[in-house]
Length: 149
Image 1: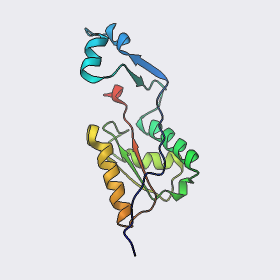
Image 2: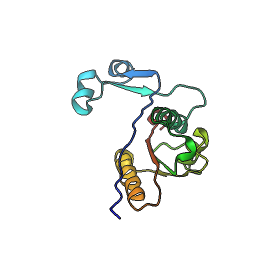
Image 3: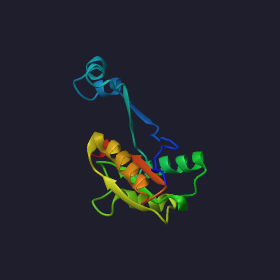
């Protein structure tokens, strides 16, 4: 039997509607668009303003879109990993909340908290689970609500 390979079979994203541009920031703090762009490349960021929403809600919207796009049923997901530094709470992991919100009743879920590199660690971990035949369908989500910290 040959080696099992992992592959990315679908990609989807979701962002909040509210935009905060560098020009908006100029009105709030002593900065300007040129300074921000030259150091970060960022011109705008999205801010979650929906009352009562948290990181898990954004992640769930992304997962729902992915499932629809790929024709995957929530019950087919074996593992869901959320890369975040702004989880909903300390316990349970945000991934478990996302599993519940999308109906992934058979999935095991956990968070990876490693800032910018967290999504890459989550992808590498997911790949290993697939290659080792522990799980066959793994969903990786990167979601943060930086305006909350």
